Each structure stands twice: as structure tokens, then as C-alpha cells.
Length: 228
Image 1 (cartoon, rainbow, N blue to C red):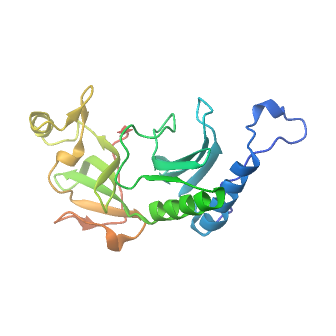
Image 2: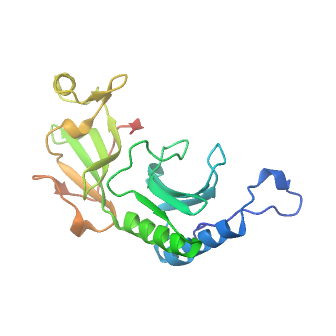
């Protein structure tokens, strides 16, 4: 495994402008240090880490991005504000917490050491979750839809759809069933069971795999536009 930059705090070097770097309190640095030490065995090429602040600078942000084939699948992380830490799936661009916490969200108050340990354990639990890539084929050959998901809860991470390759009438049926969001974003979870799945990462034993889906390590061509 190559060396992975893991929850490191960037500090200005010779010739750098210190104003271009975030500053953190001793308590925040101690919090990050606990997370780094406890989670470092989970560092891998398929994960990138971040220590920063959100745009409003109201908290300390510690996050990881799960990546596959150069594609960011999901950002998960914690916000430390004073003596409170909150963790959940994050907005893909703003790194903010969702308005409605998920079932696996973290929300705890306490001392820095306690919060760091709780956040580290929460990160490890998130990194253990099984991630599968589901693929739908037309004529058992062309992939017209794909979806990455946390396979223990079937939570969509990101998905793709190609009208050109989809079976005739399939999008119309999805629209009629209400599986379209916003400006025509097809929700492929409304499709029948996928033909194939790829185990991307995490504990496959905890995955709930759709009936009929067959394992594969060959991805072939996949639709190019991905969205949540």
C-alpha cells in the first residue's frame, strides 16, 4: 500500500503565506490527533482525508471521502463545535451536515479526549460498511444504469443513467412510478434487481444483496454522468 496522507493538519512552510492556512486550537489539534491515531490502520488508497473548516468557520471539520475508480462516492465526517461533536454523511461540496440526521449519525457532548475516541470509532464503523456497485444491463451486454450504495442499508451514494442504452420505455416507467427527482434525475433504485454487483469495499458479510444479482470484478463500460 502506498503512503496515504491521513488526517494531517497542513502547516505553512518556508515561503508560504500563513494566512493561506487554517489555524486550530490546542483542543482541536488534540481531537484530530486521537482520530488519526485510532483510525490510521484503515487508511488506504480508496480513501482521502481532510482537516479543515466549513465556509462559515463555525466548527472544526474532519472528513473522509470514499473513492472508486477516481470517482468520489460519498463524503462522511464530523464537525466539532466546542464540547459537541456531530457526524454524518456530508454535503458533497459544502461539507455541511444534513438538516435531518441519518440513522447512523453521531451527536455527543463531552471532553476532547472522549469526543475524539467516539469520532474515531464512528469513522471506523463507517469505513467498515459495505459499498457495492450495482450494474443494470440491456440485452445482457450494455450497462445503462449503475449505482453505488451502502449495501447494509441500501443507501444510494451516487448513480448514473444512460438514456441511449436503456431499454425502451424504462425511463417512462420510472417517471410514472415517481423515481425521478429534480430536473429529470432518474433514481435507479426504482429499477428491478441489477444483473451484476461489484464489491468495492467494506464488510461484504453485512451486505444485503438483491436476489438475482451476480458478483463480478469486470466493470466494462459504465455511464459517464454520476449524481447523488
